[in-house]
Structures are given as C-alpha cells and as structure tokens.
Length: 194
Image 1 (cartoon, rainbow, N blue to C red):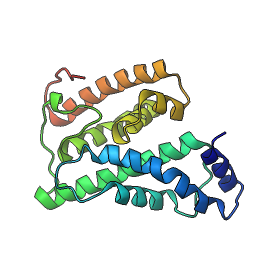
Image 2: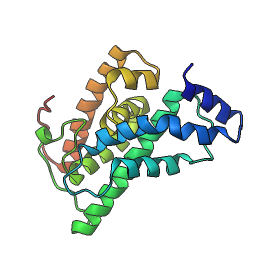
Image 3: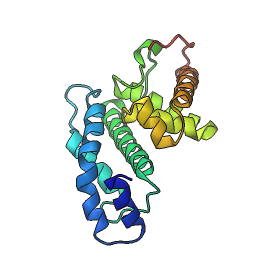
C-alpha cells in the first residue's frame, strides 16, 4: 500500500491532519500531469501547470477532502477537475474572442491527446459529454488519456481494468468521438490518424 493510499484511508477515517499531509505527496505527480497537459496548449496561454494544480486542488476540496476510495479514484477526480478547468477557460477565451462560436475542423487535426485550438478542445469536450451518456467508463478513459496524459498502464490501473481492455476501449472511444464530432460540425467523417 502506497503512502498516498494510507493517507487517503486516514482522510476517509476523518483524521483532521491527513489532508494537510496529502498535498505534499500528490503535488509533484499532479504537477507532472498538469505540465503534460499544458504542453499541448497554444503559445501565449496564461494558465501555468502550478496554477492548474492549485485550482484543481481547490476544486477537489483542498483541506476538506472527500472520502477517496483509493489512489486511482483520487487521480481520476483530479483529472476530471483539470479537464473542467481547461474547458471553462477555453469557453471563456472563445466567448471573449468571438462570441463562443465553434468552427468545423479537419479530423486529422484532432489528434488525441493533443488539442491544438480552443475550438478543437470544445468539440472533443462536447463529444465526450455525449459518450459519457452512452458509456461512462470509456468516457472516463478518454478523460484520463486525453486531458491528463496518462499512459495506457496508468489509466487501466486507475479504472481497474486490464491494459488490453483499456486499449480496446480507447480504439472504440476514438472512433465514437470521430463520428460524434463529424455530426456536430456537419463534416463527413474522415479517417483519424495516430
């Protein structure tokens, strides 16, 4: 059992000091995930990995941490918090820039896990919301890979599935998202590379 899991157990048991001990242990890992995600942002973006981690930590409850089931549950929630922060920021930038209108994109430009524009990020987000209605587990895998940059091994561990299962889910989810994005943009489906 890792130190993180032990502290999460202590948080779950209501130990007041445990949340204060949790942040230093998870901070570097969260910062690496945030840095990976921020590396795919456009030049000139204003959010830095440290700020993303801090904002995600606040959204996770800061010192009033909920009862996390395990390490995977915690990092899945952190991935979701980071995803929502990035989506909110992309929406705000688009609203500020040109009223929030999305534009059609070529599918070759949408390479998971590296969105190149706010428009692409929002297209993927909207399609992902639809996938979550149909298959929440596959949508969670996409969040972990696309928004946090976890490897198949890390994402499979967080979801409690085998790596081959995660790879199968990933292939299905990418195809499903491609079709959904083509529906959103009224552009015929094209082959997605990578």
